[in-house]
Amino acid sequence: MTSPKSRSRRNGAPTPLEVLDAALSVIAVRGYYQPTSRQWEPMVPTAFDVRAYLQGYSYTDEPRVLRAFDLATYPLDEPAEILAWARAGADQENNYRQRLARVAAGPHVAESDIPVMCSAAQAWRRHREQLRIEADKARDAAMSVHQGEKGERIIRRVTVAVVINQGRHCFNYNTITRYLIKLRDEAGAVYVWPATSRAKSLPARNAHIEITATVDRHKDYQGTAQTYIKNVRWTLSS
Image (cartoon, rainbow, N blue to C red; front, side, top):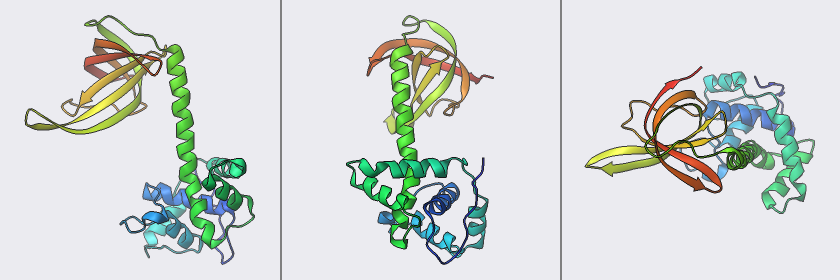
């Protein structure tokens, strides 16, 4: 899926969709969204890149970056979905959503409003991710049941739902990184694997794997039955 790259580089004020297209392209290349409120940091604020890109040049004076923006890709439906979400915030009590809705409703975006229009891309993605998390929690609470007995060795095909880096810890004079890995099987049962950097390798989020593990304990967390596992061995599953 690619971005439409339908912007026209001109001196006039851009449309909301043109700003969103440019912002999504910049974020795809930079790998982050940087607000103008943090412009003292080394990263270039997204709005600065977008303003320059809409005028046909690179804010950092790097032709290769400009070319990378041109070639950047993202899901085609995102600009329209973000714009619709932004305009729907007019009745929200949140001041940010009200201002964003006002900017998004206009035919063009004033230069002073480019930062808030750029921020819509990241705000919408956070909103979408929060909805996904809430949906997953509701599904887990409804479907998950405890698996096996304590000490039992089990084999399951699961999907890696979440990999949480819990930071570095000192253990026996050695520093290790702890992870909390949430797994989900086809029946909806949830497994929690407390892992460390001592493991030879760890699976990535969304990977489909087959595990052989020992049931450590059962726990109910926020209404979801969780099976904690240890001594985990895993392989990629088709």
